[in-house]
Length: 441
Image (cartoon, rainbow, N blue to C red; front, side):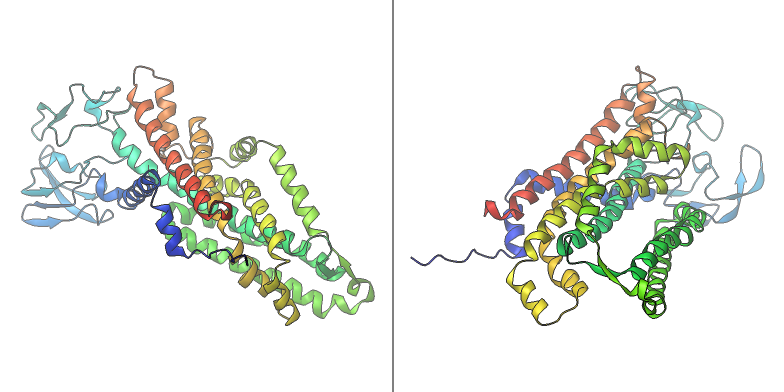
C-alpha cells in the first residue's frame, strides 16, 4: 500500500486543537483580561474622578491630569491653583462624581489608614469638615494597605503593567537576537558562510559603532522616553535600530567599494558561524542568568528599561538553539535546494522560506520565556535591585510582606498574582508544544 503524505494542519486546525484544552483556554482568557487591565489601569485604579461637577463646572481629572484650574479649598477658605493630579478630590463637595472602580492610585498614600491595615480591619477617612468617619464599601481598601497607606489592590493592578511589559519587551529583544543568530548558525553551518576579510573586519568595527552611537550616546534619551510613555520609548528604540542599520550598511558598502580593492582584504575566508554561536550559547548557559542581571542592574540601577534590555540580552539562547536545530533540518529540504538552484539570494531564502517554516518551536519558547522574565523581574524587585524606588511592582510588595510578617496580605495577593500569570504562560507553552509538535499529530 502506498504511504500517504502527512496531513498539513492549517492555523484554523491548530486553533481548534488548542481550544480543546479548557485549562489552556482559561489561561488565554486570564492573560487577555490581565492585559486589558494593564492597558486601562489608570482608568480602573486612580485617586482622581473619571468625571465630576464642582461649582457648576465639569471636570475630567483622570483624562486631563496635567490641567491646571482654580479650585476653592473649603478648609483654607480661599481659591487655590492646583493641577488635577495634585488636588485631593475627595475633600471637595462635588455636585456629581463618577469615581474609578478602585478610587486609589498606586502612589496614593492614605494617611488615615497607614500602618498595614488588613482587608477586614476598621478603616476611616476625614471628610470636608475635618470629621473622622468610617470608610464605606466604595472607598475601602479591599486588599488592605501598606505601611505608608498605599492601596494594595491598586498597586497590584499597576504592578501588572510592569511585569507584563518586562516579559514582552525582554522576550521581544531575546527573540530578535535568537532568530538572527540561530538562523545564520543553522543555515550556513561552519562551511557555507564566506566573506572577504574587509567585510569581516568592518562588521566587527560596525558593531562597536552601533553600540556606541545607537545605545551609549542615546541611553539617557531612551530612558527619558521610557519614563514619558511606552510609545515614546518604542519610537526611540526604532531610531536606535535605524541608526544601527545605517552604520552596518555603511560599513558593508565601505568594505565592498574600498577595502576589497586591496588584495589582502579582498581574500575570502570561511567563518565558522555555527561553532561561534554554539560556543557563545554554551558560555551564557553555563553562567546563572540572574547573577548577570543582578551584576549589571547594580551598576546601572534605577532603570526598568535597562533591566528589560539585560534580561533580553541574556535570554536569547533558548530561541537560538531551537531556530538552529530547525534550520539544520530545513536547509536540506527540496524547496531550499530548488531556491538555491534558481539563484535566490541567501538572505531571501533565510527570511522568506527558512525562518517562517521553523517558527513553531519559537512560539513555544517565547511563551516560557515571558514567564521566566516575569520571575526574573520579580526576583530583582524583591531584592530591591534594578527598578526605581518609587516604582511599584509585585516583587516590591512581596519584599514589604517579607519584612513585616503580620501583613500577610502583602505576600499572599501579589504572590498569587505572580503564580497565576506565570502558570498561565507555562500552560499555554505546554499546549502549544502539544499542538505544534509534528510527532503528536
